[in-house]
Length: 126
Ligand SMILES: Nc1ncnc2c1ncn2[C@@H]1O[C@H](COP(=O)(O)OP(=O)(O)O)[C@@H](O)[C@H]1O
Ligand SMILES: [Mg+2]
Image (cartoon, rainbow, N blue to C red; front, side, top):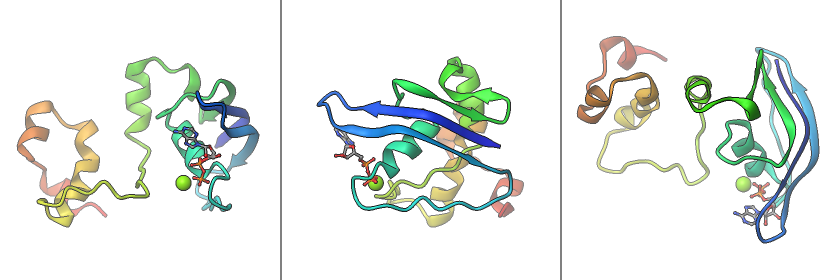
């Protein structure tokens, strides 16, 4: 279960990205967040995996409170969160498969990651 409550983010220039946002999402369900440009969709998604830190509110994912996690625990939780950025951030010289496999980098050793050594299991996973 993902439970978000009272999330507020104000950018340094005073723009308000989120004002007291709250909702719950049940495991296994599919949820779409829709709204006009500037509504705060990107700010919300970036807050969920703590790419940015809201100044107030709680983000409870299972038994973890995302805003309280120390760096190591945060890395472990982030491994379970897939995020595709609006501008894709694809690496053009690499194949589509290699771009997808880079999602596994958080689980691999530095050397295997740098050399692009992926296991058969990683390559065949859907
Ligand atoms: N880096 C930023 N600096 C200042 N204001 C920002 C920044 N990113 C977003 N905003 C502002 O926060 C609000 C929400 O933006 P955003 O989350 O990008 O909305 P959406 O993804 O729904 O288009 C908007 O008013 C936007 O101008
Ligand atoms: Mg956006």
